[in-house]
Image (cartoon, rainbow, N blue to C red):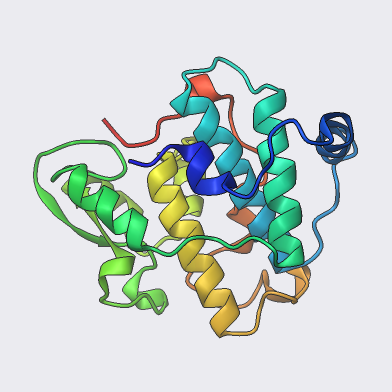
Length: 213
């Protein structure tokens, strides 16, 4: 797997304008920046994912200046359009390399294919939308939104399956012209995801995993 720092931040010049970047990152956290539209919610979540990925990969107990810099730079770049979310291709490689095990809990027993976006909610029978899941997770998740299901379980998904999920949500929102919509406008509409459960804050890195084991 490619290093997370390379994957997410190849355009970042480390240590450039360090103080200003760090203040920017902290300002978003401390001030609880309000995320009004769908684009801001999704890109902020993805920027937090990049922050968490680098921290977990480095086996950190807590987030540091480096991680906050990645989040701030990526969020700014995504909003401005100077940076872009990668394709599902890398996630497909991870799915193949991680072997036949449940993407949610890591079990190797009674595996089936699970639709991340449930079919009954418009999810497609396409490789991008399919991951391995054990019978227990498959049955428990059912036709629920993945993040809503995780919230009900008081759990947080492995970061690699969350990355795939967020990419699917972004593609769906672009295709359906939802990126500029206000969150309140779509929260009661029927979509294959629930905008209210998109994670905008992440647990500390010691509580996260990249791939279910």
